[in-house]
Length: 141
Image (cartoon, rainbow, N blue to C red; front, side, top):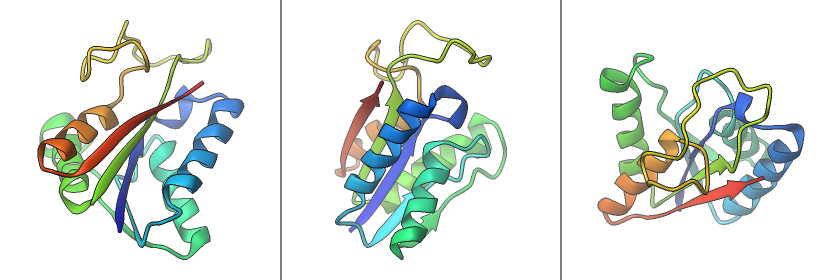
């Protein structure tokens, strides 16, 4: 089974939520043969999924963005993840740490909820589901 793992960048996690996210990745990959992800240059879920896949001896299918922008980069990368996975799981944080210096939004504008912070992984899960794949957004914290 090809499992897509996407989610928040490293700076959005505290040590506690990072540990929870890594434990969740391990559970999600328990039945995986291949891990599909996007090699985010900001670290976090994508790179942790790759590391855990490597530790478990799983094959990886990694789609880094061609450019660091939506069109011609993240959008196409996210679509590749959605199309090459049997299931796609996003791991996002419920709230940003106080020291987070990036952009802040009052809710995730991909799913119109405040259950988790904005994550492009949420958009990727929605695309996967649109194309008949399983998908779910998990929130830690």
